[in-house]
Image 1 (cartoon, rainbow, N blue to C red):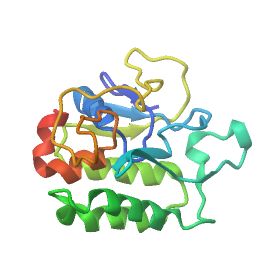
Image 2: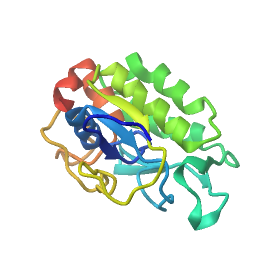
Image 3: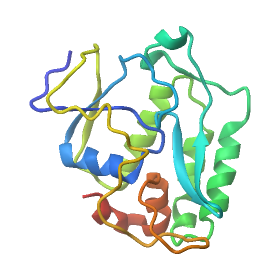
Amino acid sequence: MLFLDHPSFFPIAYFGSVRYFQDLASQGEILLEVCDHFPKQTFRNRTVILGSQGPQILTMPLERPNGSKTVTRDVLISYQQNWPVIHWRAIKTAYASAPYFEHYASDIEQLLLRKHRFLIDFNEEITQFFIKTYQLPVLTYQTQEYRSDYPLDFRNSDYETLEMSGEYTQVFFGEKRFIPQVSILDLLFCEGPIGRKTII
């Protein structure tokens, strides 16, 4: 087991929400939980973008070799359908008119289209991209064993319902109201590098 001074424990995330990255940035040393039994229907393999009809959920199909007892680090990404292209087209449709779409589009497309066998490797690469892009003061490691409780435990935080702190200018369709429970992709394409101020 890694011995860090005051680590905080987080779930892995597929293009995690803005609130997820706000919490990461507030903690510094992070242990990502990969030794738990993988829970179904969570943001670990789905994300929310803002499309023309409002919030749109993008879900990545998975394979769990041991069924409900599959440990997170053993979860595989399924490519039986061409979901990376489907997700990229949805993202492109939603954010093509956003101020910073052209600047970051190729980076996000490459992230999506680079095939990974394991979910944790894919999500780690995505998370590291945003940590680097926003120069967040965060160091991440992966758990090496499962424990049921920790002093600084964010593993059961429901990032699909938790609202972020603050607001920024979004690309709106229809009713102009701020939508707080969205992927970090929304902040990236709408605010670009200025989005760091929203996270930290």
